[in-house]
Length: 321
Image (cartoon, rainbow, N blue to C red; front, top):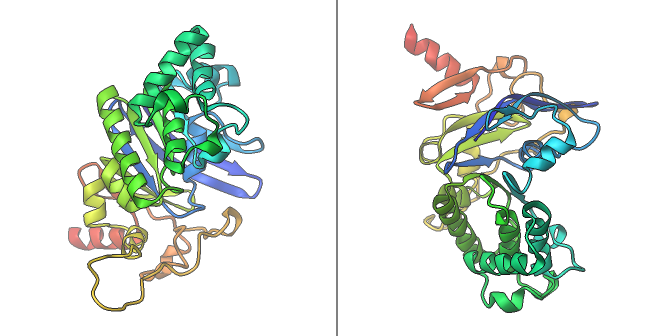
């Protein structure tokens, strides 16, 4: 349904995303993980044609075979809501505090599908029920501040599903939720993707949520994709030091006694301060001399899986010697 090749986004300060590629077919669920500043949200915005002004976009974004990189706003408007939709990070910011949530969900049904107000309200009621909002009839007339965090998130999901999109982009949909509500939201997204045969791009820093929700995984750091493959395999045996660092930093209930939680030192640098070579250079505990100066090339680690790391390149050369 969507194919991205060589997508790069550049600001006056330098590249922000570099040579990103991905594909999501109907019914597929792709996860994107990485620390804040890795480029996950900007990637999502670019797939919706919502890149902020002042940024240069190059590469290819094909939706159902149609090239959208460089398309004008009117072309993107014809796709949004009807073909693809996005769940934004924070429901209280995404929902209009002065509008009843039922009216918010009904609006795209009236605007894009041409439904009469009564029919749009009925469809909104059905969407509230489908997304598990309790007492949906009453919730239609309530304002965002009258709902819990989980209910607001479900309203955003209902809003995104209103026009039956083929691709749903969920940007950190569980960040503001407690663990139990987050679990229910991820299960809901999986069920909806399966029942509707809808592509799902699930963006998160929560590896547990990603493991429950996705089939394939893409790891980003500093605007680069550093590893990709089947979710279960990447999480079981990460090939890139950055992915391994993210996994080791997760708290574990199985750990016995007191121990210091491993961390990745430092933070993701701003675009203008990123190393010329591997973006992870300077924070990696396995760094070698060439890491800071040379960009690593992808190395196949399993069928449909790869990671970009000089250590993997060196091992591959050694194995072939």
